[in-house]
Amino acid sequence: MDQSAPSDLLSSSTGMLALVALASAGLVLLMRPGPRSLRLAGTVLGLAGVAGLFVEVLKLASGGVGAPPIFPVIFGVTAVASAVRVVTHPRPVFAAIYFILVVVASASLFLLLEAEFMAFALIIVYAGAILVTYMFVLMLAQQSPVEGDGAANWYDRVPREAVSCVIIAFVMVATLTQVLFHPNEGERRLASAQRGEAQLEDARWNSLASLPQQLKQTVRERLQLSATEPIALVTTDPASCIGVEGDQHFVIVTVQGKDQRVDLTAADLPVNAQFLGTTLVRDFPASIEVAGVILTMALFGAVVLARKQVELGEDERRELAGLSRLSVETDGGSNR
Amino acid sequence: MTSMLASFDASSVNAALLTSALLFGIGLVGFLSRRNMIVMFLCTELMFQAAALAMIAFGRVHGNADGQTFVIFILTIAAAEAALALGLVVLLYRRRETLDSEAWSELKEC
Image (cartoon, rainbow over all chains, first blue to last red; front, side, top):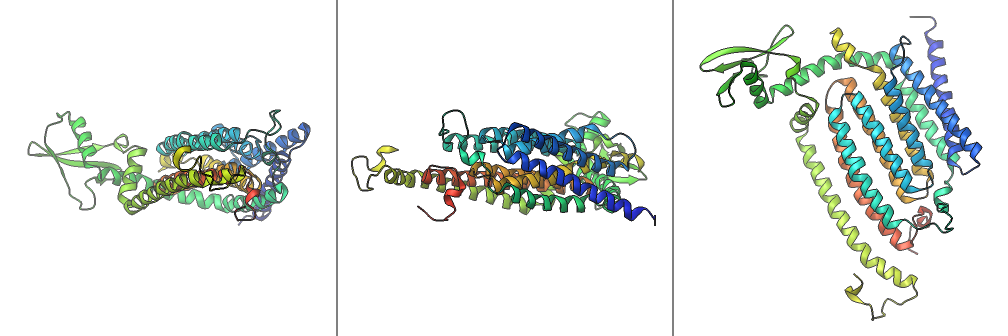
């Protein structure tokens, strides 16, 4: 097609590769304990690399026209920066708190992607439940720092093989960005997004059709009927009780012996949570059962592990204290 | 059709995919290089987060709720994993009185 396309493609790819390398170099500097100036340099390098990547990627999305939208960049950079702090912070408690910031930032990205229910579920489950568990375990298992001058434990300060780890991650992220943001990929994604938008409309109308109670409620409100008025949906098409005429969706109902046509608008479509819920129980019923089994097994496993730790921990303590396991004066359940 | 197209926000999708790739890479670095077992598991949660973000972004592209549905299952697995892994961490901590994963590099007791 275009003569300049291959060179454009090459420059965009290598540019992105260079930016990922820049960010990785910044991460290496941040990982290792060092003087303040080195860490500052790492922060600057990393932020420059990440910001450059975001600009490049958003340019790809808009085709280079118009100002890039601000919110995806803010949330994305916040998530990445706090993730770096999770990895580099010498104190695990602060790492956990920065992880909450990652969760909040990616929940905001979920909101931008119109996944409202999952955004709040993520905050409740991750920031609310899982992070509280982490905090409890940190309190249970955290050693007090040996030096006593507020310094963290040495194994929290000194990373293991920081350079090789960052190289591994660099290869991985470079591959991912090359695949995800290949210039041809943008067009393909836009094409499937066009198909996807049409499918999304159909899918949401279908999920409304499988919610007859809500449909009747809508009809009652539209016709200003009382809640006890009996109405029946007339199904003309066996696949769906919602008819389509051009762009207009409608439903035919029987009220007081008469058939009546009620037009539906986009405002009557189920909201994100209803849509997600109907998809979940209609398309993935077996998966819900499996998820329940997994959670139950995790519960049993956690109980077994927790029981084990009390008894074995006691034996271990005795050994550490130089006592024999058979010493009798504090035997049995007196310690529990 | 044009109004539907306008509602699709390619820049949000791209930003989410980039964030997901970077979060996964950072989580990988953390898991491989940190010595503290709790932080290592925190980094696996980071990688779960990246996967969830990619799921939602691609679900948005393909215009159905399957991506979001899968994130519900990711949350389930993450919760189960957190309960079990943290139970194990506490167990290991009781044995060696340290959270350093190097203490277990021999893969045997004492």
